[in-house]
Image (tube, rainbow, N blue to C red; front, side, top):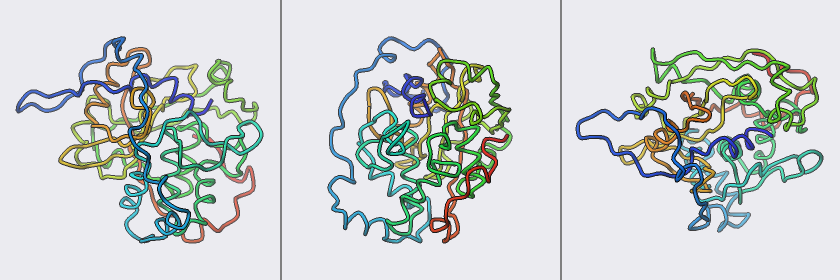
Length: 327
């Protein structure tokens, strides 16, 4: 079970709820944590009200869209590509290797989960033409080779550090939060890999990361203080408390979108939405603050960067040539 499965199992707090309305002249704040009401913990899933922006396009139109204005600012590209995914149905772990442990297709535009939505948006936004998309997606999803055991399953130990090493991401949490940002850790031990959820990943022992991994985090109660300053297109990653038997603290991610003087999270949401939506960030955070079983502690922020033009054309590195999951 990768982050995709964790998104499905852990994020009951993503079900839509009534927006929180702050009192006049008061600063928005996240309410204190409490047990999730039954109405929120078991929402009724609803089907998308309309198709996404990819479905009506012919293959030629899609290729033209990806190639059009390929050198525009990356944030603008990410917003445009991610917008095409709005209303895309949420499906648990929709991508795989096309064979082996996970035979799901390697690319699709008709279904996403929280992670594959971000991965595919990045690949489409970074591409200078459609032929580059598969290679870019492969570089984002895998440490080196496109094999299940080499996939970036764990955010703190693999997905984030590997994509930072490749020059695709930069941690900008402290840029926006300044002194409100704190350093937090996730520790993986052999004991962690004995838990049911960790064993569900089906990773051989030699591919199970161990160690302590550090992230910068904006505490949940401080996020709204800085939210309006965060640039659209920034990747927002949700962290929960560190539980020894959980292989990750990261259970969700999406893109920050600033519009109409409000901050939104564009994300693939499991639950009452069951699709990709733009959700008011204040509403999202307030609901997550009420999730008491596995507490949400804050968020981290990452900015995507363009790789060199030769990045998508280069052969994949030899397996084992990069340090995978080192803290």
